[in-house]
Image 1 (tube, rainbow, N blue to C red):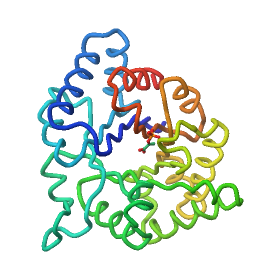
Image 2 (image 1 turned 90 degrees about the horizontal axis):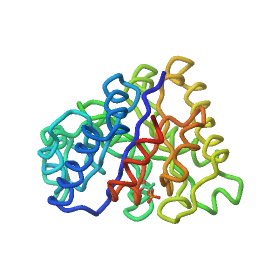
Image 3 (image 1 turned 90 degrees about the vertical axis):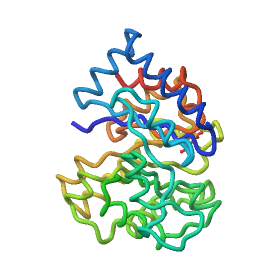
Length: 264
Ligand code: PEP
């Protein structure tokens, strides 16, 4: 059984105090609410994983605010070099040192706003897999790519370029893929359950073709794009969707708790 992941991407929101208040409120809910306690047993038994991705400057406060190991911390980006003259960048050893378990790589905003290309994203993915931080690697098509019938082609090329040199055991055990159609991110226009499932099933088939049954069976594939408490349960009920990457709705603790609840 694949462990479900409920991951919040805070983007450029939540300063240190806000990050630490959020973590404290979520932990209070986990320890005192009936449903929160159900979430604790699901986390403890390995059925679900709760992840939050603060901005770089709030990672330390988020980690410090945790009084349990129920919530994992992710970064939103990383540089592939270990150290050196890369002004403004943050390395994998720094993320490890700060307490990150995951890092998001290839988010559509990194690809389309900051121009990160296939070559750079492959370097980031490979460097991450050589570290103790695990990648949440994002793929997804633009609206015009979907309407012109190129969704599969786009997903194949994004994945092929990134996982070309990886091996089956790495894909199955260490990589999380997030399918985030760009037209659904921050737009309120969620992919339908069947469209999201279709794309995630296609990604699993690509993994099967390249890495075989064991890797494709254990690969976790998330959906992201305007997820809300109102649509999370039906997305999570799709057989190839193993979790959710949530932007806007992860900024409100109550909404994030309701999304966790929908995964139980
Ligand atoms: C995201 O930032 O990855 C995301 C999916 O955002 P939203 O949930 O706001 O669409």
